[in-house]
Image (cartoon, rainbow, N blue to C red; front, side, top):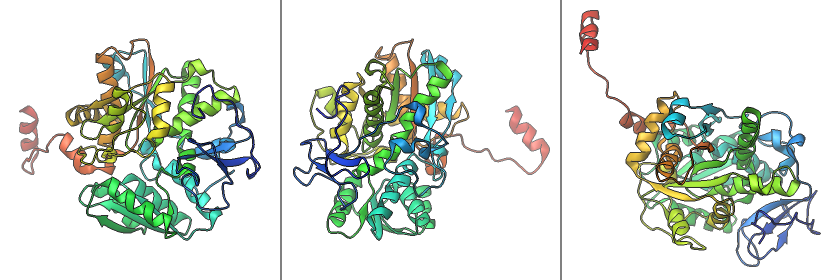
Length: 419
């Protein structure tokens, strides 16, 4: 199986371009990477992955940000807004409260548009310029639209965004609007939006930059490379586990691919690969259902609901890549309630780190798994937080404390403080 940690290093096919090609994860068919627009396999409609004839080790990386890892990407540079190089925060109080050896927060909300999506867009929009397409498009719960609009604008390209009406945080819509995207609000959920935008892409109306696009995941795999390098620098070892929110399962797939490539390059021992642990909201947990039931594929949830809007997704398109990633690394998946997400958001904020609700799912999931004894007390763990607090200011305000009215005089303020 091509997605096994023990899979052999790929051999360069005849249709490779400068050592890069696309390969179907289901049937193994290969394709030239930039001759045609392609999202899935021509033969079986399976998901595609980008393959490389030459795989780098840590010694090959230089510079800063996503393009530090150019040797692990299809190009030397992309359409860039200085994305990547996000903080790996220490959180000592949370670390003690949860009760593990080490806990770090990888805060992707510190990217240019406030989410991890920027990593995928710097690569994806660069590929779009190589293919010569004129319009970019995505379905979005918000963060993808903001990143696509910003990077499309940076690249001088038209952008089209389909959003589920009434289900996207205002801060995210504002970003897409200001960056010049054409925004259409669809009377349906995210999965309905993705169905439509896939049809538009299939008709040649736009270049799809959702995580179904294999090139977008190449940028996102740099999250995993940064986490590993950060832990090696601080602890002289890689983390035992990486806990991350799951929506469309792109990050789970991307991190697993990064680790497989390091194993194939001889830079990481198979036994040292971190356990990939996915977290979903209880109201949108098809991946958790599949893991718990031992299923080979997810069952599409038609009705999904959670205050963590960024992961309000019932049909994760990258499940065929992500399920092996969780299982092959010895990880798991867990569902958490909206109340547990809000509590984690407050506690992360107590460490001075502001994240949107979906981001806090990772810490909520870690806390639950630790309480259940799934996570051991001697583990070193990285929790991925995917979006900034101000992505959803309404949710932040609801999770925080209410302001108290006081008269416009010092005595009034002192009386309030005394109470």
